[in-house]
Image (cartoon, rainbow, N blue to C red):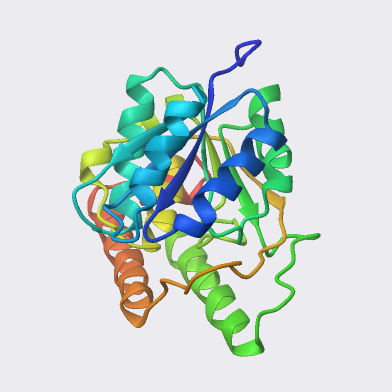
Length: 252
């Protein structure tokens, strides 16, 4: 059973998000008043890290983790997971700093963890009720196709494997060998869900609306898609050679 008052930490990774970091943090804490926010800044040249430090000095619910350079979203999350495990967090949430993950859905993500009915919650654009209101058909096909490909190859039933709006019971993260995660970019989302499934974690999807970022430019690139494609194949072959094929196929 989850603790009566779990320690909830929401990770906000930043790189050149000075215009977003304050508003997104304020919105998070207004929506989930019992949460703490960990801002993970990759030495942003626009001063995001310095602004985050000022915010943390004025609010004990905010903490900042500085990294020396931009090494990819996955590496930022691994550093954050390790930091929050050391802080004895009970629940850990991933959210983008650019408002593409609307904070109004945070209670929906947290509810299955608060009640003890799930170990990992995926904010899904592709289950009933999920929406992507302003994407082109081509962008939808690429995103949905990536999730379908990963699901088929890795034998996972979830409809949105590439999304980054996720909530974790910290014990699941503790059970992962975080140092052995391969992905540095958005493929990290596929890999962590896959490894959670291998561990037997109870994973559920809840519908969300994905919105375009409010300020700044998207950090997506062709290299990110190529990394995701190759990672799926690597994970599949490594699982076959480790003798776990039967375990995955049976839904363990």
